Amino acid sequence: MYDEDYFKKLQFQYSLLLKMIDRESYPFYALALEKNLSEDEVEQVLLLCQELQKEYEEQCELGFVHHTPLLVHFVGMLPEKLNLEDTLSALKAQDLYSDLIEVLQKAVKRIEKE
Image (cartoon, rainbow, N blue to C red):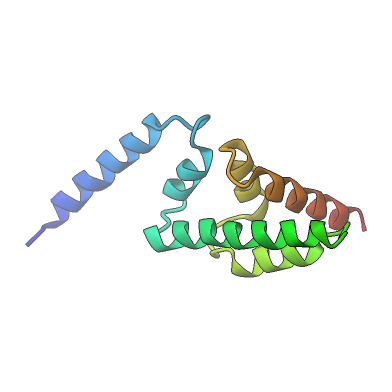
């Protein structure tokens, strides 16, 4: 079907496209490409954020101040290919789930201080 030269060409073209992507506008998608995430893995991260955003909003309504359990859940469900801080930074820079991501970043900083 496809020979090795064909796949090498695709890899090369992929690497060129990765260099062309607007990393400032789409940092999370660029990270997903760099880490070679599958469509399912990207969808998993975005669905996780959506779920945690709802939990965060519910916790705020109940008067929660610390949201460390959300961070623990996020870390536990994050694909192994992704680094926590890089992922949070990329999601925030792309303006995806900004409120949630900001809270998760604060939780990381609070844990690092302890």
